[in-house]
Image 1 (cartoon, rainbow, N blue to C red):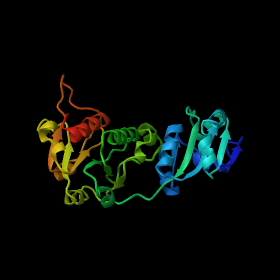
Image 2: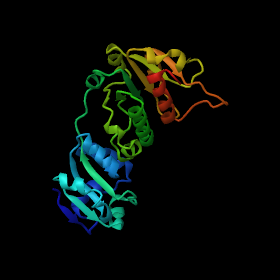
Image 3: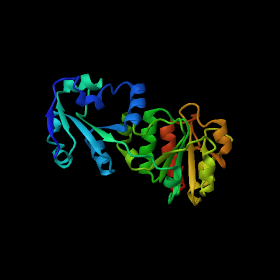
Image 4: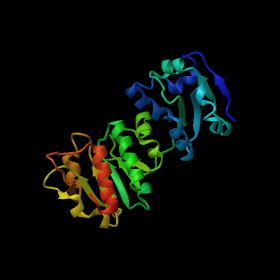
Length: 270
């Protein structure tokens, strides 16, 4: 059973995992270096635990102690109970959901490990917006994608915003980082995957015509918001595919485009 510890000092060093959560650059450097990530909200905390992550501590407002009682009773980690005002002073924002947990990161698997047994894979290049990362993972989990591969410069799926937007789906889909880009794509091809690059370019094949659902193994490549896939990434693909648009719309947000494309990959409907 966890210890319930009431804390009334925002500078208490025991709360250090939760300090300055709104400082994106600081947290992006600090969290991987210290081997932690922050789960926010009851559902996300529970999903992180169900996925096997070890809890370092919890930060709760008093009203969340009873709703989280079963978790508190099961974990050995300390639970810090604070006022909403103190939580805001520590984290830098109003903690609407009233519950935060610091979780221990696990070593990432290798690309080869996540490709083993997979048939439908997402490959992201330079997607560095945490909201988009979270949205893509949520769609990937919901629409049956088996794994995610990230270029070296993609944002961290375990950053708090990504985890929150995904509603914990980042814990459901295995992912790995490619060490080199785009040369690392060759290993994906050698593993038996057909590389399809998603682009709004009119010269690309309509995704329903490409019929990716008929392929034994497909890796769908997505680029960053605005810029899309780089020329080198497009050149490394086996085929370029597009989502047909109506009413003069030239493209979709990458999160929305990903969901449409994942459905096409799974079912053949775009």
